[in-house]
Image 1 (cartoon, rainbow, N blue to C red):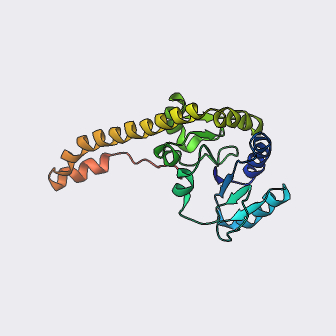
Image 2: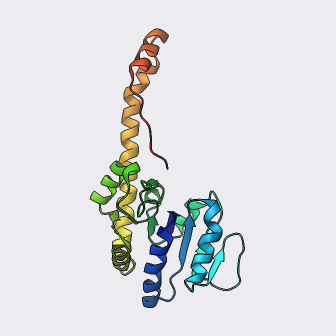
Image 3: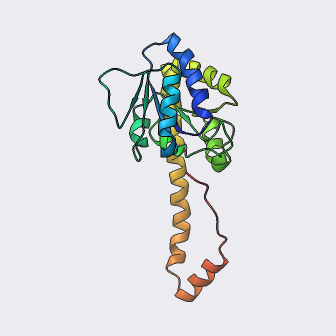
Length: 205
């Protein structure tokens, strides 16, 4: 699966997929562009590359090579059906997209180098060998060849990804245990603490 892809990433994914299909003709690529206004352009690109392509909004009776998920809100469903996921917005300088979604479902991940929106999370995932960073289309192909050839590696990476999510949920719970007593302070003290608390901006999902 290639999730939340941006301009320029689909071409790299399709190039890798063409080689992968030579080794395993039964492979199916689920492709989910990030922006709906690009669905038609990506569909045309897939067909231009010679792939039989079906759209979620226009089911086909023939088995496609590429399934274009041109709907909104179904990303978790497609993650859950995948063996491995490339998380987009990362081969181009967008900053990456949320890796916790596939991680929570136990899906091993590959990402490009531009992950500044989720640096800390990817740090945990790569350290656990639940996600891998690639720099270009050639490295993407190499990593996918390794992952798709080794069921045990994928299964282990998936379990590690879920463990990272579970550990971070525990961290949130510990922070809330510290904060909850503050919520019970008199109103004037709570307001003062709130005013003195630095505000943080979370990167885009």
